Image (cartoon, rainbow, N blue to C red; front, side, top):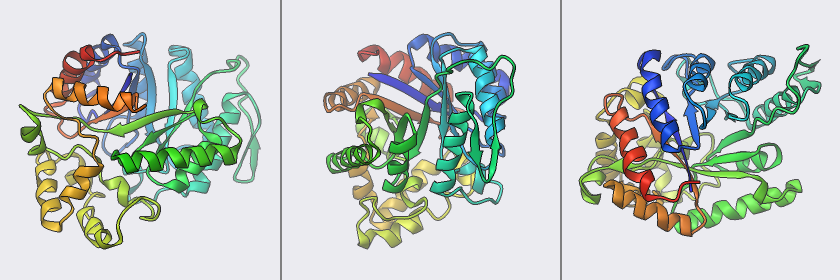
Length: 344
């Protein structure tokens, strides 16, 4: 099994080395660093420092977007990181979430995202990029040859998934974790790869979710559902296995997800969302879509082994619901859960 951790650190840069070293030494495969300038420190500055304080974990932009930077800026940043940590850099990119709406902008379209990815990949390969009517390439005299920087795309619906099958090297999957959700995702990946003339085995498929720790399963469930819900209403609701009769309630449930203060800085938010889900009649449906990673580290490890037996062996966990509890959450994963797993 492989574990990735997507960590939202809102504190000063000096807080980074402690947890970077913890997760690197624990055998975490990927350290995900967010790109949300109104909320956290600048992505590529943090990534460079993280690269210098680690020796084995891959470092991924988790995730950036096509609108904040020109493709040449992103390519230069990634290639510079590759010099610091050869073979340990991954390029996570989506249409844009908090980095966009947090400053009053709208996310990119799927077509814009695709064009941007294709342009950056060309630049990383030392080739000419064609982007928005422009043609350009990196002019570094010592451009690294054949830098292997995989492109990982967050996926919450079929349209982005199909695009990712065409141009990416992997996906962060947030489309539900119930048996029918997983079967649906796998069928879409198979269809998308067939249409693109690719082998699905070429793609890194990361299941993107959360762990909720507690004294037991019931205690954990009083703290959070353990499934990101804002992805369900990003873009369109179509193709996401959302029953028609629940759609109005789901839109109401996610009505304040574009508020940086409530979404990322209110440490009581998860309890409030549980109450809201019950009030709107969504609780049981959301629970059925969650991966069931609740309870003590042994409970979580046992559930992960069950999921691994079903072929779900790469997991990215979001750590960012509580700034004050971040290190405790990371230690529970690195020192409590991971020693009970067969980590690659």
